[in-house]
Length: 112
Length: 116
Image (tube, rainbow over all chains, first blue to last red; front, top):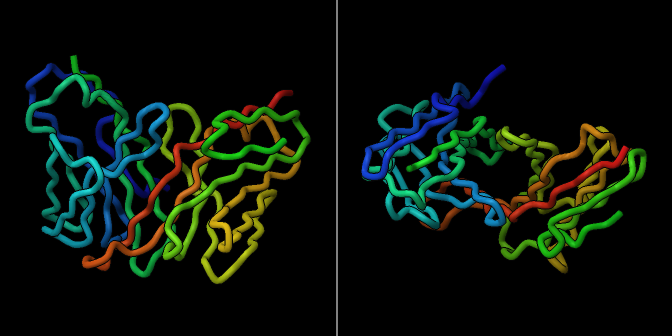
């Protein structure tokens, strides 16, 4: 029973390319998040959204943007990919009031 | 075996032993805490959570203890099995001021290795 789906598991992109990472949840959650996970650094919050068309910067938003046009979909955009954005990206969602957060399986992005 | 959490990122235990993974959190206003397990190549999976009005909660083979006085969280795994080998993250959660949105703040994780 898949709850949070990240459409791309593995991507290889060139420096300067525009990259879209898509995330869809089927639990009607208001809050959605994008994290990146790097060895030794844990999960770091990039952006989150608490409602359609609403977004808030997380701890490391530089070089990223997001889009939340529909409640179930939260997209992470790299306008011009750079090698330091090579990482594993995790999408997550949580309902209101606070409940269990569900993660997607992750998207491994390599920028060459 | 016991880990001091973020300062000792690797814990090795014998199969059948109990494991204790520790975590220190920073925000005294956090109102819920969660433990996640992440296996190689997969996203984090929820294990157990606890609210700030509790100090202990038990699940299947797992127990989470919360000590708000010293801002400490621990995960105990009974009779550790090879399938328990993974990275374990603690997370503290609460609302981000001004938005009403839930958010979680994660530790860097502890790698548990179970020796058969």
